[in-house]
Amino acid sequence: MLTADESQYLHSFVLRHQADDFVCVHGSLIEPEKFHYVWGVNDARAIFLKLDKHICFVGHSHKMEAYCYDGKKATYLCEYEFKLDPAKKYIINVGSVGQPRDRDPRACFCIYDTTEDAITFVRREYNVKRAAEKILDEKLPSILASRLYVGW
Image (cartoon, rainbow, N blue to C red; front, side):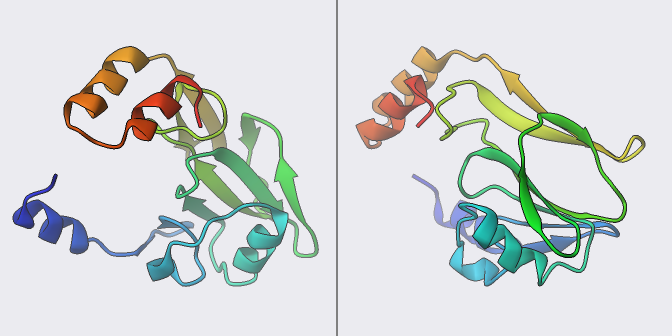
């Protein structure tokens, strides 16, 4: 559905964006061009071993999740709001505002508060029915519309 110019614009994006204390990749820090998923602690552990920043933000799986690494052990964090420990590393899967896949149809995103050094996951209701109708109106695959109702 994209024009050639729009497609070229998207291909101009970098696959890895770095800031002072964090890095952003779409899928994984490991081979960002292959868009690997972060599906659990084992995937997170492999990323932590390559992570030279405090935080790695990812999003490819469309699930809001967070992992923590203390230098020895990678763990899954269950909290939706938490302070970051400067002695630890984090992988933050930011969720999805358009196609959430964690069985919650609400839009999801995260806020990184650099002043408080904290992460907050946020959920927002939106007009799922209208979004699904727009998908179908554009003749996109119907699964993209139906999955909106269940967040999968």
